[in-house]
Length: 125
Image (cartoon, rainbow, N blue to C red; front, side, top):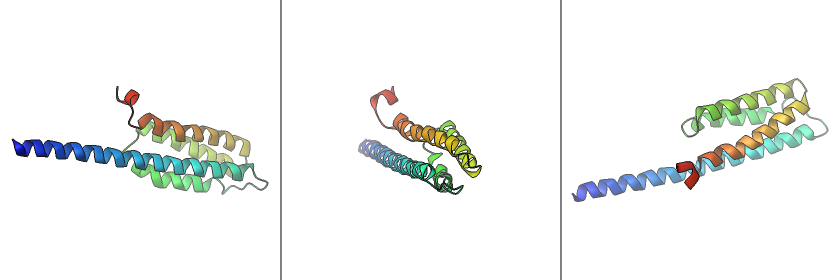
């Protein structure tokens, strides 16, 4: 009996501990992603935008998405992939206005995706 109670309590503690660290990782990653999007936006709005300006954004996303596949829905990963790729393609073709519009969508996604997954009452029920 005591063994069952200890095992159950240990499982609950482990669950909440893993949830806490998952939430922190998710928030940290998307906060970082948002900052890189803003830096890219500043570069593209600058006087001498170049085709490499969106590459740091693309590289960051490609590195982080592997770990995020376990946490966020695959459709969200796919959607962010799409917008990052379009932004990169427009930047390579020197179509900076179109790339900036894609960055606006990415900024919105960088805020909405983690918000939809954080531990709060409306996300549970």
